[in-house]
Amino acid sequence: MSKERKSRYTEAQARAASKYLKESVEDIRIRVPKGQKAIIKEHAESQGESMNAFVIRAIDETMQRDSGSDQAGE
Image: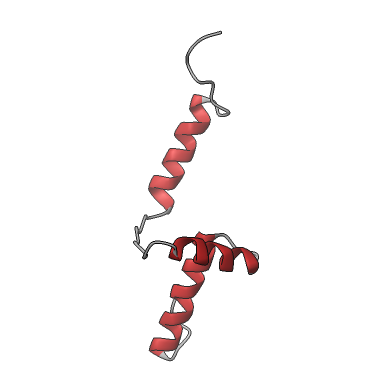
């Protein structure tokens, strides 16, 4: 057996995924105090969401509340 690690994805699938991410999404990195990540993750899971979905929802809801309209997320 080769020492190379076998991927679950073909090279073409990896290229397609990379292209999709490059064209469709942007990254935002946030830092939280030690221990806060676990609290956020637990809360998100209790709501049936991923941490990413929870953070996006929290941002959208806060932007809507701050602007007093339904313009956030557009």
